[in-house]
Amino acid sequence: MGAFRISGGHHLTGEVSVRGAKNSVLKLMAVALLAEGRTTITNVPDIMDVTIMGQLISRLGATVDFDSEQRQLIIDVPAELEQRADYDLVRQMRASISVLGPLIARLGVADIALPGGDAIGSRGLDMHMAGLERMGVKVTSEHGYLLASAPERLRAASIWLDFPSVGATETLLMASVTADGTTVIDNAAREPEIVDICEMLAGMGARIGGVGTSTLVIDGVDALHPTTHATVPDRIVAGTWAAAAAIAGGDVTVHGADYHHLEIALDKLTSAGADVTTASDMFRVRMEDRATAVDIVTLPYPGFPTDLQPQFITLNAVSQGVAMVTENLFESRFKFVNELVRLGADVRIEGHHALVRGRERLSGAPVVATDIRAGASLVLAGLVANGETLVTEVHHIDRGYDSFVTDLQSLGADIERVPLPLAASL
View 1 (cartoon, rainbow, N blue to C red):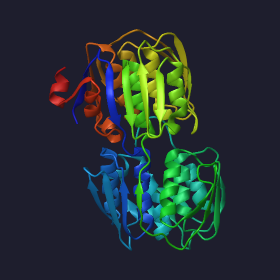
View 2 (cartoon, rainbow, N blue to C red):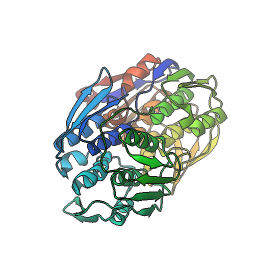
View 3 (cartoon, one colour):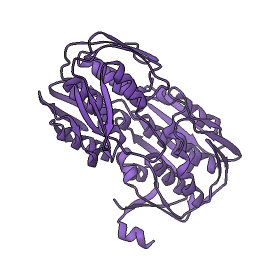
View 4 (tube, rainbow, N blue to C red):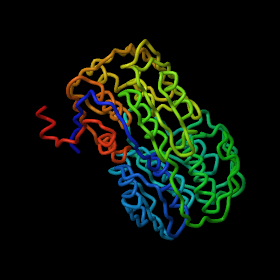
């Protein structure tokens, strides 16, 4: 996959468009397994994770066709599916666990390799398993696989989540839409991606109440039918572009984004000194002067998103003043800070707090992307670093960002993808 080489010192100016959300489309692909026949998903990002998920679903028996020009996926689901999701694919992407709900609903059995994914901290499956057990599923773990079986049709249950887990909400939601009776999921996640899943399920014939709230009420139906559904815009990619405009300075308009999904993040940019304007499906961020540091506390939606925390640490690293960033969701999310410090950032970590003292300029150096958002944030840091910054392990960035380098180049950044042999010599 090579590396990204960035020469700093260029403001960002222009327009960029946001595609469908990675954190939604992967789950929508799993949702398609719930109905026999041909389902179409539009506004699909051309990213590595979509490719991996497509391979996984193909192994389960479905046919997956992706038209990259039309940004459209067609998933043809057979009457009979395979029950096993193998480790070689699941280990590459944690979202693979999302096939658990559809398989247990369709087949009454599923063998899912325990997932891998980003190194940002533990994301256990306890709540998935406990909720499924309340619905009559027997769940065990053996030889690195999660084994789930339900000899009879899933039964409705009242389920309280100890934490509004996105993954657990998705699994239980997909499992419950064809369960016998009415299932209630309390303290459910409220992210726009959860709403997106609910809307696709409704289009397939599911009956779901409380969409967008912390209490989901699902009346089980006998079967679902295929549908056509457009993926919700990627709020994290949109937020990354917003942060990039504030970090590098300039004037960036982001199209295809729902600013309502980013109200707290955009408000923080306003506090940092940016001029932010919004319209129905776009927003514009202008930053003429050096930003002012802003405190950040990550929380489940509608709180500040953890997936934008690295970008805002980078913003604070080049802002005026001192700010505290508190991470409440993933204990290893600060792992990338060691790489940011290599670029000259002044960041001190204590527990789940990061104290960031802004510096006027960073200094280019070779750094390593440790996860999707960390990698993007290191690239943004390179935009304001003296000299050249080389970001390696960019397959992480490719997992979550469609046309990342091309879009940055269109905004005026001096960035290019270089081959690994060249990267290793720099």
